[in-house]
Image 1 (cartoon, rainbow, N blue to C red):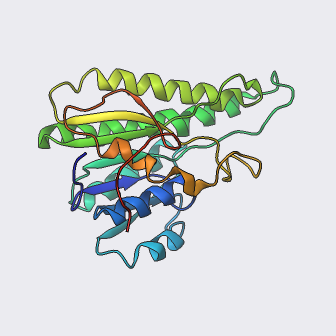
Image 2 (image 1 turned 120 degrees about the horizontal axis):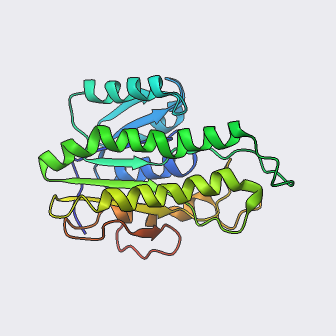
Image 3 (image 1 turned 90 degrees about the vertical axis):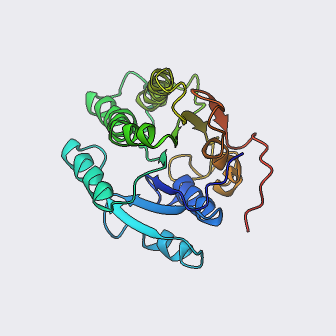
Length: 236
């Protein structure tokens, strides 16, 4: 398990839920955090929650379903001139539950893949080459363990695409000091998971940090479980 104190991390979708928990956990370990939300104001609460930690915090914003906004978001990060050591692709959308699972629209499919897969690919493309050049990087793509739920088919299919995207990129990272893995946060009581889910969002900690702490020759292209992963760290 590595020490990430002083590293810079970009966490997408950090205004609430899992992303907010990850941002707080990284800050507790001494990691500088770049917060992302759809708007400038999205991360006001998360920023307040981080103010007591001796780390630098930054705000960027952009709607991940829009390619131009994703490119602008990437430019905002690069304009910070600090480099990205850890990329946590957490942000995702879930289209409406369809009791008639043949009722998913093309917009449902398109929007799911734009946010959950295509934006993720763009962010990996933007920051992984710099990680390779620096000889260090950790990329975590949030996936899902959702199965046999055609009522949420666009969401489920997009998360399977996340797994494939991660696996393909991992095949190119041998010997680079860069690791890319996926994280299943579990079924959580969040805006996406709903009120009847198995776990509170706080249950994802500290397991969600595990893929950011692997060694340079550690797991690559593998799936981590936030709920079931045993991580021997203390978050002060």
